[in-house]
Image 1: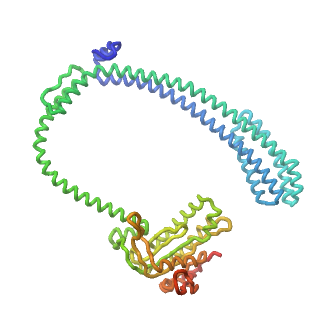
Image 2 (image 1 turned 135 degrees about the horizontal axis):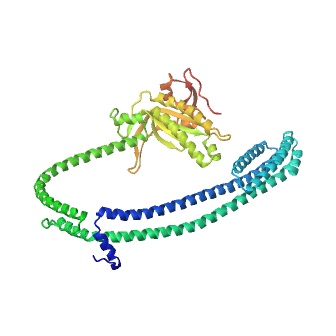
Image 3 (image 1 turned 90 degrees about the vertical axis):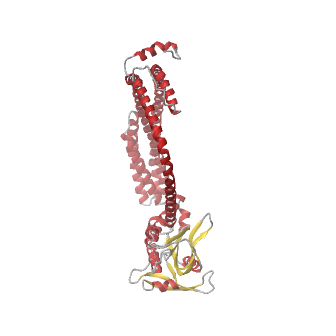
Length: 529
């Protein structure tokens, strides 16, 4: 058998004459390659294990360098806080000093537990110096607590401060020792990396060479048979189903040739059957097209329903959405004139809070506040119109009718005040307490989809919306201000007191409004001062 590499022809001929099955020939070749690959894998695994251990050691040493640096910083910080306390008399610096000492003690204990070699001697010196430092600190603390700041400063400068410099020097010794050990480990890793790369490269070249050799000598004895089969299948694919294939091989290819001939004969019979079935399929195709059109219509209907549900979920409580989508209540996003109750809520003290809080804290607070308030909106089945910075607009009695819409709004407002107190206790910073002012109005407004084809909002507009927006600006922190019409609808629910008449921007006549005191017979609402 002639091959592209004449030097290997004897080996190829030997493999071809070998009486073993094709499966055994391939298995022997695969096992040889597998053993070499396994050896390479084991070598790589051992090298990786060693590198991983060295990397872990380098990481630990790096952590020790950082921890020793923090020890040095804790010592320096404690001396700074001590000096500030003695110079200014501010006890806050004394508390910071205690924190710095605790940090130093924690780091000392963790580092000393894993000490080795020269580090043990350094830690012994640190313990001795730290004992002297503690004794001098007790003397300084005693004078400072006795209001003898001058005497405390003298002891600090004479005894405590020099010992702190000694501790700083010992901390730098720890940094130096850990850095030297880390650098030595890094050099060892680099050396092992070079050796490992050479070993892996050699094993890889050997694996590739053996794989190429075995692939060559195993492929050529069967390549002729494969080409014959390929030619035969080409004729079959062109519809030439008369000439059968004859292969001289005495292995699996002989059986494969017989099966190919059987397949050709079966295809000849199948072609005859196919022609008979072709006409029947054409008749069924028309029915399938009609079924497909009906299915597409159903899919479009389902997609429209899903989109409608998604849009409703942005405004309404889940139970309201389910009622609408199930057909229990009719709903269409068209403009209409309805009597609704409008509620505006606004955070008081938010500007002062945002001035002292970090931007991330402000965002986290807003998300927490708006999430909890949205839960209340959905609990009372209100419609969440929009968020207005740190405020929100909610309306009731649409899209699902609610005969008690005014009571729902007022009850939700009282719950919002309670929830706001909980949030404020968690988030108030400094002298900036957070609270909520709420304005509620009832009357006829226009409700529906308002906007452009690119962006639509289901919202409300009208005089009562403006009135609620004005009332929220009048409300004190923690106060709920309601309009006359709202008050008439909730008199049997809450106690109120008149505030006004109020001169409200946009209204020609003074507006009579009421402050909600609380549920009848229940506790009074707390207003922030």
